[in-house]
Image: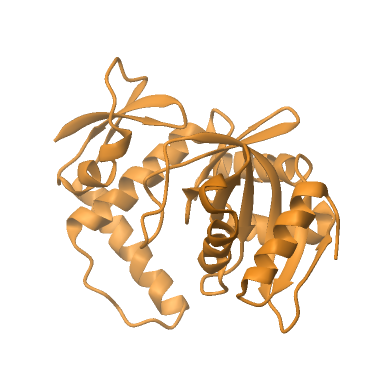
Length: 247
């Protein structure tokens, strides 16, 4: 099964075994000549099953029966992000919401409340706020600037748009009894940023990822956000990140 899609402004052909990935990417379908082809094989699906099982064991979750079609969607994204890495495009885990032409990215370990906080921004700002991606956006890192691209790999809520928005800041999100936000240095942010980047297994690709993560840390404002899951937290974070202030 084949189709041509646009990811991060690049055309890619997907040649798959199952239809799931084409259904997932249907809003990104395009025409024209692809710059490259992603082709999957049964062994790619087997490797994704092994990775998913190992991750579940590490996190203490019960094993699941993933379909081969779903596992192939993971294999395709792994291959895609590996290909785009050479063009300074980095896979990053987080919720990215755009407001008034700028993108704000919230990252934390799973279950902390990234999606909830992004939803509160949408409630606060209404039509001014748009979800770019709720799970795995792509970050295109150039000299002194970062662009966030939506992708269809956007978590269980499937909140994403095929758009590109300049990144205005990253908040490291933590749960708290009070709402507070403060700017932090690249050094303080580095462990979390590195953890949230896609980490390829090949040494050369991993070195490229580390270099891009370092450029990311020095290209945009970074914050530590401790907050409750309420609308006032969204208001505080928006005002602080938009104006560069702290509270």
